[in-house]
Image (cartoon, rainbow, N blue to C red; front, side, top):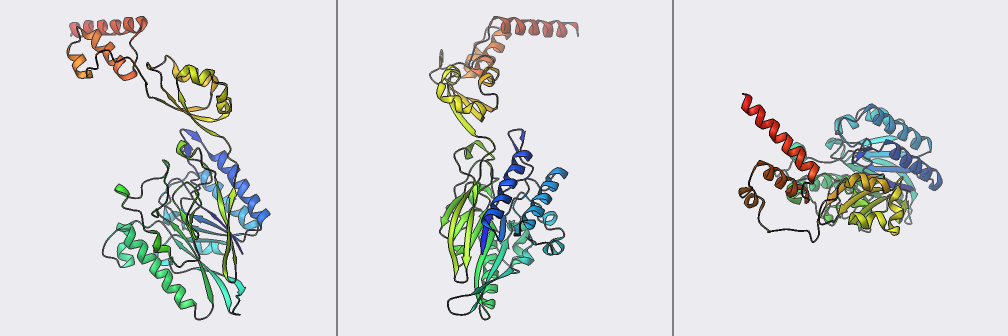
Length: 392
């Protein structure tokens, strides 16, 4: 049996103001092609299917189309909810959807209700089954009572959830050999985070220890956007697309998990093409505009940090002449002129007049003095204010 471990689709998300529905459609095309080519039996989606609790109509249609195409390609789909999803809305009509091969696990009451699939007979001649469990994003304050824990923490609720699953596995092992696969949307210790994930708790307290997943055949994690293996059998698939510039070096894709009657036999990387390259550029404006080695970034989404000592005039406009898809511009002046190293408040206190105050502020916030035209505009504005005050 072949499983495709995915997560964090974040359907409906934008990238620094750029809509991503077309890119997400392209990812779904690649995923469906993978399911057909690799003869995938089950697609796992470990939470954050949507980017927000109330997705737009076009976003819901995109998920609907994806599920129809995946099931038409012969795969079952198992979904659990993440911290971006509304578990109640995502879980709507779950019993009806099961008839079409889509299995939703979004409720605490369903933690020990696995999807059971036959694997044949193992080496000992016993019937082997695959038990697929889903642990949705568990908000400790909301689920602690349901799980019977006194301390509302990520550790305690996740420990209680995995204990329910282990108890269910133990009950089933009398009749068959059970190979368990657990989907969980959480922050497991050892995972490497990136900028586009929402914090699960303040100060990192939400991280749960890896050994909570000991004993499961495979744990398919969601939440972190970089594909990574925390251990041989505990992995994050990462998001299928980059959702922040901190993910610019990540290779996006999924994990292909093979199982036989005696358990997991292999886990392989699956990679998908990015619809657009991400470029993180740094240097002076002149260096970035003139350097031939940056030609590859001319068609990329760009995050640019300018290091000019003084902020260049019309910086974004000039950058976009070469890098039209510059989405983020930051400034980190290097070796600039700091005339007297005095604090802004100290300089302000010695300003001779209101025009000097305004010009000093402009210099302070952008690292470049006001030119003649700007000084004349500021002087005219100050004169208009003076006349207005005098007329009252």
